[in-house]
Image 1 (cartoon, rainbow, N blue to C red):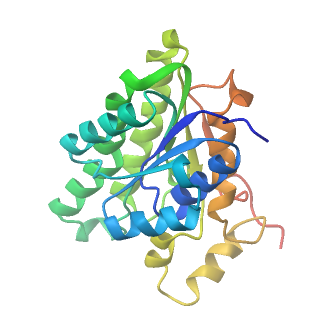
Image 2: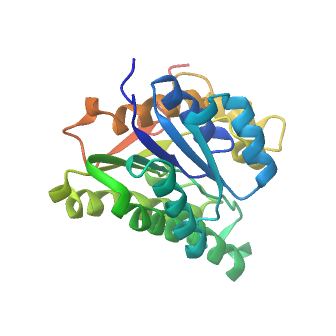
Length: 251
């Protein structure tokens, strides 16, 4: 497929995991891709791994820093002059019992997972062309309570609510806004949160398809929502979880 030929896509948090997998997928489909991250070394490594030459722009940017976001948009303006899609993927996960969460934990979660997503979209609006698409990264915890994820889940619920409201707000410009809600996906964040050697097997056992997912599977969903194949879809959430939320395993 060549659905993104000559299109420009911004992916925040694009140096690893779902962001990097989505960058790879969209490059394979012809896109010009901007990836951001907070670490120059990881950005350089991601560019080498993607091996797409002049079709990749790496920009060091922290989504919590509005000056960084302004500089990011100026870089995109100079490079390509416009955007056709945004995958607001940058996020963090602090997984603790509610009684142990600190004010700093709450501030970090809200700043990155919600404030960063909101201002990424707001700052990108002048560059987004009519008919563009925005995809926000939410979470399966919209649908099932996870005991150690009270604030994380709340920020991700806010992200999907943002997809719904922005879907209405931006519709007059022909800009579609949707979210994706990944389940257990094998990323660095997931591995950091599952340090118990048996946790991965326990998680997989909860999934009807019997496995933890991979970034490429999320990337395929993001590519669909960002493409013209989803031209009549906005304000929706697409769950990529192997059946975790909706079904019991048949075993």
